[in-house]
Length: 284
Length: 259
Image (cartoon, rainbow over all chains, first blue to last red; front, side, top):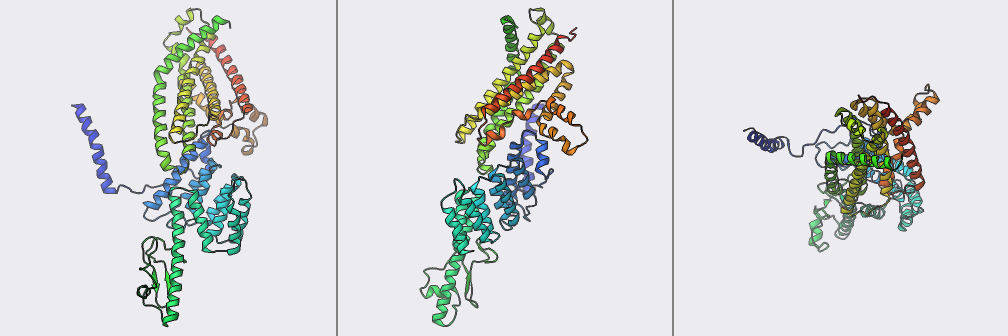
């Protein structure tokens, strides 16, 4: 009898859990809390196990970032910085925490925390902790260029990185290109392609998305030029991009790589990436 | 101690090894196997390019922590249990000295820990192999240092169990292990407490066993070399410290009133 009761109770657990999940939602965001805010505190709690504690905090960082990005309603990244700080204090040699932590921190909201200066500070800390690591210097240069729009500083750092043992041969030419061309799109595309090549998973997808954004901006510029040419020949702007297609200037209606049509402003003749597109970014 | 003495120590050690390995170590290894398998499967998805390091960190931490638990909780019971069960008296009636019995108990648990560490190490290498990581023989040097630390803990647990109750002995041993891992804090104590006399800081620093000496885990995780000279000095440190602790322990045990 008691065995039967135990069996029934055991069977009831998944049923009740299923009901709770249906009521509260399967992927309900957990309330995130951080009880220890400094790496030094955590170090004192886990003497001799700092490496494992760093791994645990790094996994928590990745889960927290992924959870906020994917599931949280009002995306906040309040715990991101303390989590990364604890990770790199416990294990100052964890290169991945600097590199991926920087991208989590730098990307504009809602994709990331939108704090590029903090990301640069994190990479600077990484460069101090791992002075022989060219990849961290390379990223520091990239971030100065991509997020802080400081081509001169970026170029100087990239030159430094290119002089280090093991650095790829093209880093020097990239540094020169940054200095010569300032904030051009081709350089940015090259940097994001490098980040994509050197990373995996979400970070790779994110870098490839940036490349697609740049491609979309290039395509929008090309279409704007076509509109200008159409206006020069016809004396007025086309009413829509469909006019260009009818005139045989376009094979089909242009879409960006996400499959979203471009936006066209007849008054200014400007073609831009649609706000509905995942490739739209503010300020472009 | 002559050849006869050594063979009697070996007999007690073999008996202790059989007892301890049969009772508890199996569960420890089972938990370790499950942990390592799960970590191997999950880390690739969760960690972003850190699976090697995390598996090494986790495996080494398990060897360390599980070893400490076995060393303390079995160590404090080795002699005390024999006293409680009164099984010591018939043993000592045989041609077996208390020193030989004491050393035999230490050696027996040392063997159990050796098997435990060896099996866990094999599990760690196997997990790394399943995630296509290149096996690094240098890991063995760090694991050897961990094992020396465990032997030191066994000797402390044995000594303390002859002085006080098993619960208190376990607690004090654990405190010593934790304190020994904070040796850097002890050494720099005067920075936060300048009033503490220097001789006291020095005395504490040298008296408390420095368990940091046995910790090469971060070097192993990053594939850094562990210099043989460092290993040699650590081995000597362990030998000296274990020698002192076992010497005091045997002396206390010898003078203990067993009636």
